Length: 291
Image 1 (cartoon, rainbow, N blue to C red):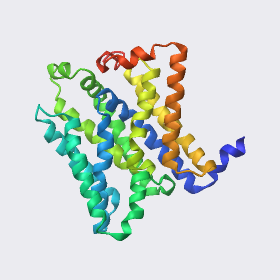
Image 2 (spheres, rainbow, N blue to C red; image 1 turned 180 degrees about the vertical axis):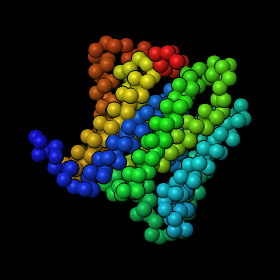
Image 3 (tube, rainbow, N blue to C red; image 1 turned 120 degrees about the vertical axis):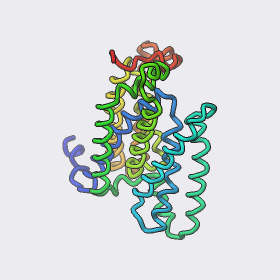
């Protein structure tokens, strides 16, 4: 048994992949809680697709693809914020406009380079086994930055997520907090592309938080649980990839999906009121013991 557990760690490539995937899993797990509670499930998926344009542009001009993805992520966040300022439009509406426009432009540009299709597969489906020291540095930096943001403004972000009107009445700059959250999610999306790709990213961003919500009654416990689930699923997924010879990103998302199914069944069988929890609005979910 010990040999079975230790065998993947004998490879330097797998050690980097394990660290990359677990960091990304924890990061997406925490930020995904804000996405779920805010009802912005479309957000992460949309940003993951819009950055494809940046990746393609960077490839065509010979720049690092991560730099192109980061630039488009920033552009997407700024455009989303600008569109949302119109009270008739929401974040989902903005993403509904930006996703087909920017992603479509990226797909169109692919035709300009015959050699790009192989690289596009990595963007779409991830290549965590190809994680480099630079990738690890980017994920570590993103994780540290997100931890700093949550330490400084976590309570305010949670309050806006659950009760925007109260946050405005208390004098908080909700527009700035929205921009901060969108920026953090965009950063997480950019550094997660290597692990699971943009096609599977929604599973990593939404799966652990949704599962954690069935198990937890307060927001910060939910965030901690989601982070743990993201890390655990990433670890288990890479073991599955090593021994069954499937793609790392796909294996991670499959583990997340399986965990959700098992927890959902377990909660229902245990009679812990999962149905009532699923039906109640986000505002009825306790976001902290006390701010």
